[in-house]
Image (cartoon, rainbow, N blue to C red; front, side):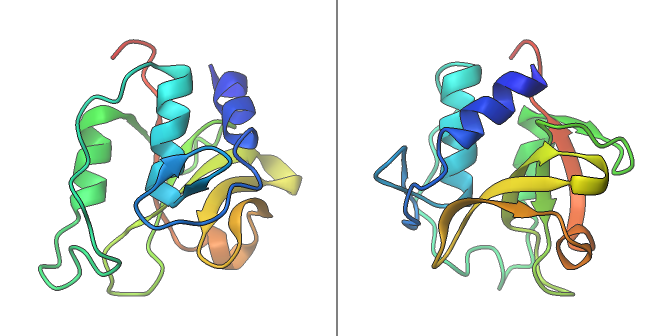
Length: 144
């Protein structure tokens, strides 16, 4: 399934960044990218996504995204890296984890696909500064 996930995610490259959106070629944010890949690989989304602000869950210190990911995806050890993994990032120390990406390549040329404000959907090197921010790794379940 990992190659299917990566192929689907790469199909979104070039989609502009648009907060709360999930429409390939039109606009998406990082959660919208994951939602779009889910629809392509798994099928209909498992639940509606309520509107959210850019600073959602920060004031409550609630790890909402992490909690929902654990429920809908298969958690795996951080060291068990595979292409197609869903990566959850903490962008600042002490902040809640709320950036998502999909591992494209692993190993010496590791990269990930993500929707990034100001850049749209891109495939970025998983450089040490990015890798240090990963707090959880998940896989799409074979059956949902």
